[in-house]
Length: 375
Image (cartoon, rainbow, N blue to C red; front, side, top):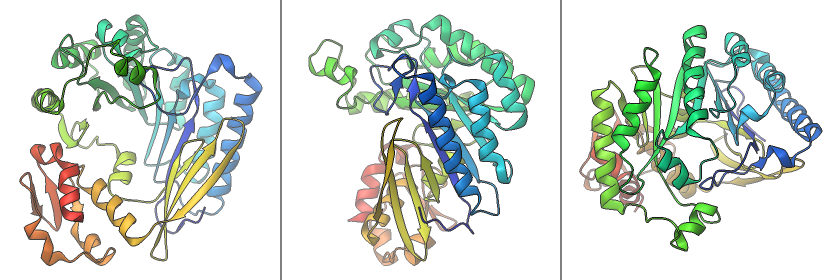
């Protein structure tokens, strides 16, 4: 993969193992019970070798790093430490996150946050048992509560940053504001720094999608109902001191996800593991890489993006977050005719400090705004 190693590079590592697949999940992963321990160790060794091959070409640390899945907690603590050591070969990233499911976090993981990691991202999804059942979640409420408590303890003991994922836009039985309040109550004196609140999206090929198609589960809210639900959530979280800085993401001041911001600001990043993507920027060319295969064998496909393809990605990403679309890059890197822009700005967007910036209403229509600019 051909990166500009003189510029910051972020790293995503996919761990394609989980305890059991949730019904709504479309990411590539394999249940741990179906994989030999030796295969998981071989995968860990292979990922570390790829990381070290990259670090040999760099004279700086990765800007940010993110271990995702699947469920990275399905690796042993020693295997996770092996990966962390490889990532930190040139120094510790500014932000180093691991995802981990509530049932997998242990007190032993604390040593990784003392040496390497500085951020936990935990998929809570809901504290409503009916919601967990409806989604086909593979973690019980009891396990979830235990995981939240231990994540808060890890934050208290190590000073790491703490982020929780929640799922919303479920049928009428679910009260999203109450669900979020229960999460904050569970955290007690150690509040999360960051929350990601996603609308449940049926992904084709998943068991949840099949149940919905066969009408064996309740229909999800329509777009107008979703907008009403999301608006209530945004108001609630604003009242709790969380800034709404991206369509689905909220943070205490200064605690925005730096890693995800690399994607939204159209920065350079490398993805390792099956299903992972990369974006490389070199000599005015944008190259996309996608990893194909499985836990035992992977191959990488590369595509040099046309100017139009790169422009589309840049605009779609830039309008999703409150920092906004960089108009200088829009003009100078992509040759956009800025005279056209003023007639294409939709309500909910305004120009501030050389960027096209959304308010909350703008975030609701970010895709429509992007299409208007691209047309």
